[in-house]
Image (cartoon, rainbow, N blue to C red; front, side, top):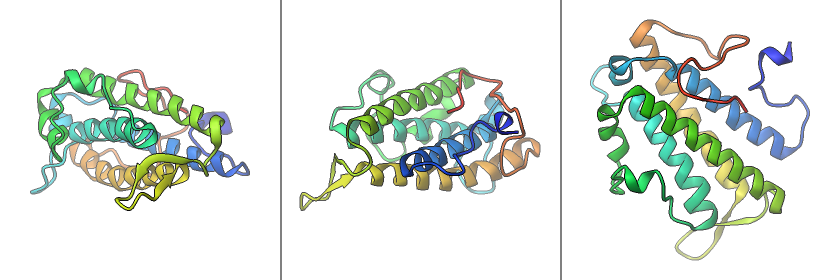
Length: 192
């Protein structure tokens, strides 16, 4: 039943519906992989890798904010990043996540996704996928909104695969997608 899987993209929708649906399905799968963990679970590492689910939550929250603020409109990412001490370094979010509580990490990601969804919906309503955004190459060629959405799908695809391996190491949770009727047990994540 479709209501049991609200994160699924439409079977036959518009291009924008398919792209945003694919992004939301990956967001939900990632959140399922990272859900309901204590500090130790969010800090678990696999082998020699320094990646953790907490670090991925914080990283993807930052990427959401950067993509749908700075890249989309050119505005600074602002709150909450300015008050969290974001220093702009490439690994800040990964190294500082160990200092954050599960509640902080889940709220950071959940809130970033909600802001991104609102900004993406407004941009789609204002000009569609073909509109040019602020992000540009050094030669001045600007990216389209379609490119930003596709980049986010790729970002989540990579990190959801990593989250799958880490979560299995934490407590054995496996599975390609959340089970029917799944809802986040921690934080305030709203599906699509």
